[in-house]
Amino acid sequence: MRFDLITIFPEFFTGPLDHGILRRARETGLVNVNIQDLREFTKDKHRTVDDRPFGGGEGMVLKPAPLFEAVESLLGRSMGDAAQPQPPDPKTAIVLLSAAGKLFHQETARRFAQLDRILFICGRYEGVDERVATYLATEEISIGDYVLSGGELAAMLILDSVTRLLPGALGNEASSQNESFAAVSNASATLTENEDDRSPNFSRHSPLATRHFLLDYPHYTRPAEYRGWQVPEVLIGGNHAEVAKWRSAAAIEKTRRNRPDLLAPEVLGP
Ligand code: SAM
Image (cartoon, rainbow, N blue to C red):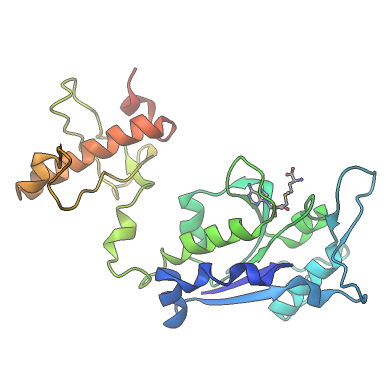
C-alpha cells in the first residue's frame, strides 16, 4: 500500500515512521511512504502556500493551487476543473485532515486498509481553501473533537492504524482481530443478573443483527502478584474455556465503564 503525506513540514515525519510495526512494514515493502513538501508546488520566490481569507477574519488559509498540483503530480493525472471534474481511481483515497471532517473510527481504518493508496493533505494555519475539501479530497476526516495545529499528527495516526490492519503487518494476525473496537453482535449477548456469573455469548464475527463495539479485554503478565495486587485467578488456572468467558465479561465491563456509548442499550442495561 502506498501513502503520500502532503505537508509544509516534511521533517515532521522523521521519527514516527522509524519504529516498530511501521518501520518493519516499510522495510519489508508492505507499505511505501512518500513525504511530499507542498512548497515544491509554489511558483514565487517566497514559496508561498497560504493567503488571507476572503471576507476577512483571522489567520491564513492554504491556497488551492499548490494542493491540486501536488496531488496531480503524485497521481500523474489531472483532477480536472469545474467544467470537467475527473474523479480519482476508486482504490485511491485523497484524505483532507480537518477538525470539521467526519470522525475517524476503527471501521474507517478497516475500509482504508482495502485501498491501494492514500494521499493525506495536512492542513495548517486556519485551514484549507474549501475547494480542496469539495473538489479534490475524496474524504474530509477528523481524528477527534479537538483542534490540532496541523494535519500531520492526524495523518500519522491514520497511517499507523491502517498499516497494522494490512495482512502481514503484525507478527500475529489474530492480534488485530481481537483488539478494541472489534464489531460484535448483540443478537445473543446478554448479561446475567448475577454480577459474578456473567456469561455473555458474544460472537465477534457472526452475521450481525445489531452491531456495537467492545474495547479490548484487560491483559496481565508476570508477576502474578505485584505490591499485593493479584492477577485474576482464572487467568492462571489454564482452563481456556473459563479464560475466554472471563475475557468476554471483562471486555463488556470495561466498555461499560469507559465507553458506554459503544454498547447497544440492551447490553448496557439500565
Ligand atoms: N480553523 C479550523 C477549525 O476551526 O476547524 C482549525 C484549523 S487547525 C488550526 C489547522 C489544521 O490542523 C487543519 O487544517 C487540519 O488539517 C488540522 N487539524 C486540526 N484539528 C484536527 C482534527 N481534529 N482532525 C484532523 N485534522 C485536524
